[in-house]
Length: 105
Image (cartoon, helix red, strand yellow):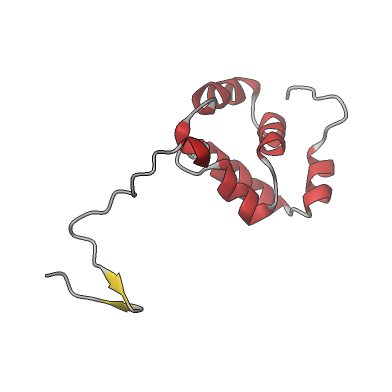
C-alpha cells in the first residue's frame, strides 16, 4: 500500500466515526463513476480529499492510479461540473405523482 505520512485508515475511521462496513461502502461509492463525491460527503461526512486518501490507503497502488486517472476532473464525480440537464428516464418507467404511482398512459 502507498505510504501517506501521518495518515491511517483508523485515524480516518475515528475522525468520521466510520465502521469497517462504512469504509467498504465509501470505497464502493467512490469507485462508481456516477456517484459524486458530494453524495459520499452527505451520507458519511467524508470530504473529497479524505475520500481520495482513503481510496489510496485501501486499494492496491495500480488500482488506485487507475481510479485516480479515471475520476480526475470527471464531471459525474463533481456535482458542480455536471450539466443542468435532468437525469435519463426510460419511457417504460412509471411516473410518480402525489405519492402514488400513476399508470403509464
